[in-house]
Length: 630
Image (cartoon, rainbow, N blue to C red; front, side):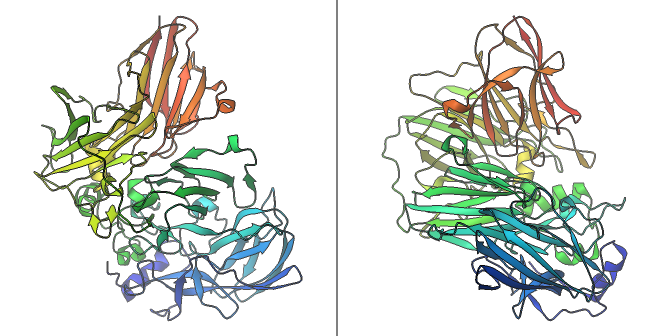
């Protein structure tokens, strides 16, 4: 992608609210992508001395061979400007002394995170242009933390997305006596500089990065087969990101807010999952076992955060150059994957394909609906299982019911007028070739193709565990998700049958475009789902799945007389919870994009209930599913 840094674009900066760069067009100093592998500063007698200078430079999130964008960043001592900022990594008990200097004209730099750890409260420090401040803090608790700077007055972390979006970095406090951990540190940032007609930033035009780069220019990670992988994640951007790992589960070892970090000492408290919601300003650490070879992805599951960004010349100028309808209908269907994506390679030997013949064979047809039209995609999945053909009336795929440990072969038949692919969300595939990321999944010698119109692609895998999963497109996600290309995938234990009378799928998806905006979310493909009939005293299982394109924080609840009932959590992302965590609790759950959660509810008496989907806690109701207990 080519970005043109023009004088016209730079002149427009003065009109859009953020502090403007200096009058010159070019900033010769390069902002270097920081992979967070080398700590900064000088250590002597348990004291770290570090200098940080904030100044303008030119940032290259698409790599040095592409044009850049003016941005504010930190440098340490005689080092280069870095995005994200210099890594502060010290043993516990270290005193950190930071010399802060502000070289950004016409600004006051407000620093956050320069406080003792752990800390219950941030203490922002103002550094006017041309001034230097000395700050001291104690690294008194092991964990993953962060610091960040703002050059716009009274800017909270949830608005950290302007020219100062790269002013921030990681703080890691290690145990003093333990062996050094082999881990990696990743900082997420967001730059958003396009404004709508009302003067508000337009979220459709964000540029999201990992350690200062956007896919396909993010770092490619390689691991030997069998390696234990430990990652630390810090979100210094303004929005939440549900981060999803293809093909594997990971263990969450800690969660924090940048000033405090909660490390789970009890194994039962550590979630095992494949999707983690990372809110603005939050941190988490994860560990996973790279036990299967091939190419895999770790990415945000909001489709708008994983497509290639628009030309940054338009973003610099702050222009909303096309309408939302044009963006979704003209740009999105042709945009490549981009932004918040990491590519992972495990081992070098190709995985072995399943043995033939496969006992369970399905056909998955991908076809247009009759109402499919320009600007309003309408697609559907149809499952052919022997003589049975399964389809849904709403904008969602039919449930695909598989059996744990039984190999399955699925012929994906593309009857659309455009290419597609299918990702088996949450499946621990034995061969990454079937993972559904065209042009990447597989190995260097065996890369999965796009499924072109009229072509068939056979997928083979064996479900390792019973649980709630999903299947969905992984091609032009925003466009094809809106068309209806997402469905539930349920894996039953051997000897068990799926019973829709007591086993209820609740899948959230996003509908077609309506009048230049997206309408409310759908439940099971419709905006007004039919009522459920439940029997008193009979256990009911609710399988919750969120595959919307933008609702990262919906709240799902089951209520009686406007109050939540009690239900029992069973699983996260298809992984069973330990018994100690299967306690009754109020039936209220945030369900982020890409996540599945299972609950058991036993109605105790006849009456009227409702399953409610809200945009947020105490927010407006999006969908209401009535339920009657008899």
